[in-house]
Length: 43
Image 1 (cartoon, one colour):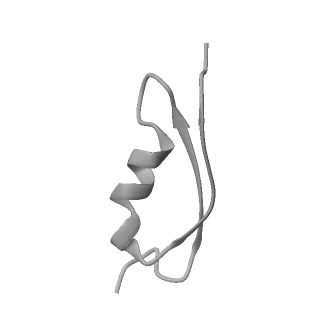
Image 2 (tube, rainbow, N blue to C red):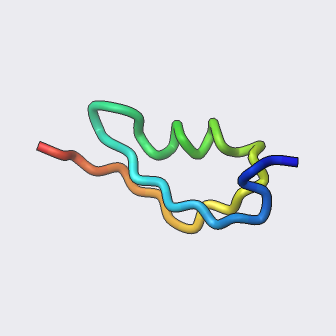
């Protein structure tokens, strides 16, 4: 059982860092539901 099982996730990625699709792929097996994912540029 994962600590994220049944939780809704909000992912905010960074263009020059870790983008949100990479986070979604890494958390795919966590059991959590991605409610919102976006990749932004913080300059």
